[in-house]
Image 1 (cartoon, helix red, strand yellow):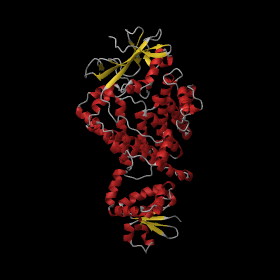
Image 2: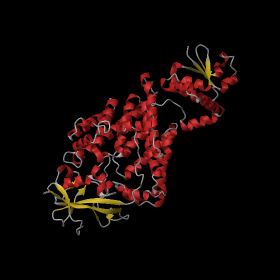
Image 3: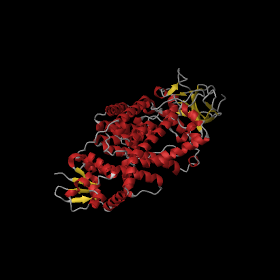
Image 4: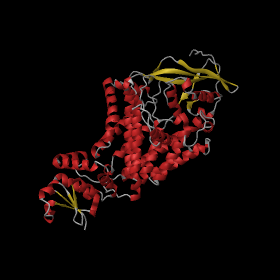
Length: 592
């Protein structure tokens, strides 16, 4: 004897819904229309059967309407939470019955909506193939991130680099900071050699993700390794894509335990990532965003444009204004649709993917946009990738804590959004929770270009042996030679080139690491020199160095060169070494 659900066989919406329920419950429940089964229940009038569904238990008792539907679905372990809400959360049962009655009175409309929002047939969604694709893609991007950092880490944080990591952790310890303030395995061995071990651990985890094997351990390895490098990278690893990769790695640990829950963790991350990116643009009060003119400047002034940015810069003002409007739609409207049923959710994610592709085609943001595209895949299901199997049930021991975990991620995400929208000081409990969570980069704040840069100042480092004839150090990727096309760099991130862009926005005092960079050039330190494309002093370091600031602009369309620049101003120096101490020369800008 099995429970029996009796429904109106002449109702298209009822048949549509029962097909879904049958796919969910399988042989655990029998289904029959009242037109064929009603004669066995003579105490129930046909009009009552036509008005609502009935679920009969083997002992003859029955429940109806919304409770019958939720009791039926509760046969599937992962859907039992709805019946729990019906029974124990005040007001939920009343709302559920109200919604059921409204739907029953407008079944034709409900069926048309279901076809439009879900599809011609409603089926339980599986995410096995979807999560497999996401895990493999994250593994690939994580490997790119580790290798990109490794090839330049010696010049940035090595013993002879710009900001030696050993000295940094020694200074943190002297200042009273510890592991829980800056979580990192560097505390166990605060030397640059630890970097190689961390990169190795990260690449091993990335390989596990790429192969979709031991996902929990692999994601944990990526998380621990990159979190450790993040702390040791100091100013050179403080970018939003770095914290996004750490957070995604933590989310994949959940995917490895329970894929369906992990999909929702990734969706909530994507929603927060997009919403924050849009909110900060409005909350900043920047006039270019409010006047829809931000893209008049963006393609030219972004840190590392691509060749296509040159052509985007010359689009008409109408197109550029439309691009700003599209940005707000993608970042403020479409994220809400990620909570919608299947079809609008997939449509929103598809537009987001196109938006991210447009960004990566016009700007070198290393693995940032690629990782955002991977997050968008969480809005899809296996049927989008050619798989139609019914999702398997998940063990009860996984369900015991999963709901609490999802609520925790959601509440922390809401707290981040509230922190952007309001200036109110959080309460003591919320403040303590944030303080304990933030160092671990589990739930972070995002939002690039809250204030649009409207001019491009480029810093050029020059050296001289006599203080009169100056030669420039050639950077690998950032604009310098006027006839050199903007390069394609992603997914690699040249960290020094990026930091030079930020330094140009302020004064030398705001970028104290510049002193260490110039010291490395004056001392002829090989690791620092390898960060440049060309060293003009191959037979020995210069006596003097200085930093000039030029204003760069794209040339007019059809010009022979890519860039044009104004006359330089002296940004820093000249300086030289004297008895291992940097001394400043005369603040004179020599001719030429």
